[in-house]
Length: 258
Image (tube, helix red, strand yellow):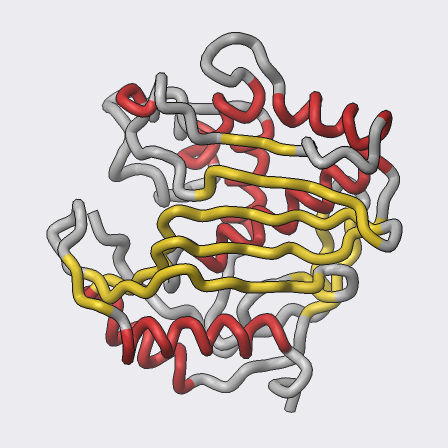
């Protein structure tokens, strides 16, 4: 039994339960209502274990594809289609475009050629104690052109005890479907920047402003909550993530709310 050691999934399940049983039922931009809670936090040590769920299966191919799409500044879903991944299909135009979303703001902010990823990596190398190692994806000038405004919109990196850490603000968090993949992406981003700057990694701290579960997800969430938690997953990273002995209970199907 690994459930006493898998601290990440224990914390995640606690937030999921709180949202399901204590959340406010609210209207959303979709056709489904959602149970919502506010200002929830996760603190995850990624120095030894990779934060991937075990009570349901998480696809490494999906979050690695999304990470590559993000850091390469891509705004078309071609990379996903080439990998038979449909997570962005509902929002893309006929030719697969999403507008100036996440990756565009990361490496070409406001279409002005500002590469925040490159600038942040250089700043960590040259001025490690700065309080300005910030990546912001929220751009009011281009929101109207985006298929969806960014859900994760702020990253701040800082060095503590000679380890690189990152705090993330997420304005909107689809707890069951989106968040597990978001967390994997954040972890990859921190590992990537740490590799470029020659630091070991410490913690990611995630602030969910509005964390929610859609009504059409409830049966899937209940199934997941009943499943046991397996051992945390060890990993290595050398410009490529390798997970060791990742095991999960099952795949749980659940449709995205549109």
